[in-house]
Length: 282
Image (tube, rainbow, N blue to C red; front, side):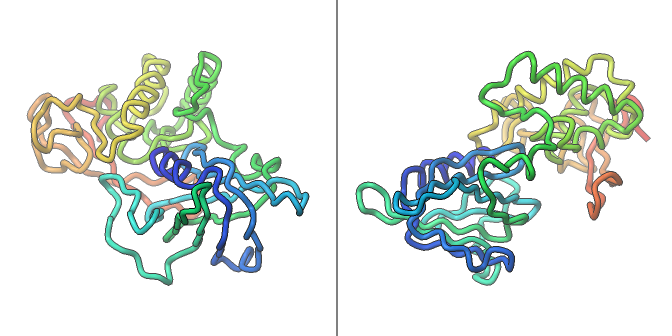
């Protein structure tokens, strides 16, 4: 999400919309032609595209809010903004939920299309908190500081009764951790995702590690948690490696399913772990 927002910002910031189709019933008739894109920025896994009204139409600034969920992806000028776990194949036209064309200062036209994106909402920028105010500290916040770190640590400690894997995926604790980082962080901390969060000896160390891993991978198309020194296919410690030898102890990596019961409608998702290396494994 961080990378997609950066590329969308570079492509659209300062440009004036000449076409804007929001293919969701709630905003199908929204007229954004003439509005300009102020900026595109991430908030956890949410995308916020802030828009300014034309000079002759004094209105409150708006934000186009969306979420990629599992399948969403943006294309800019027909190029997919992919990561290593996102399909780069062309999407069917009927899956487009937002089609934007904008004229840049030099007269060129940029086209951005969001396929399979979810939670497509248009709201006043001053009301963004209604969509993202519930999120915990954003691990990629450019203003990340000790106060945000301590807030994330306190939020994590408050989930002491939950399995660590559930707590890490709860964006209200800290925003930005996805399924891949969940498995990798648990492995690096030598604790099972099924172990209670209370078994973490140093929650602050986990928060620091999460911030560091997301920061170094922010602009990469391939996530690397191993340091990148393990040769071909050596990017991750455990994720996606079920049945293969652990890079640390040579035991077999296990794949198990973990539910997220506190998230309505969420389906169980796979977690990968080394039963030998990680305390509290089933």
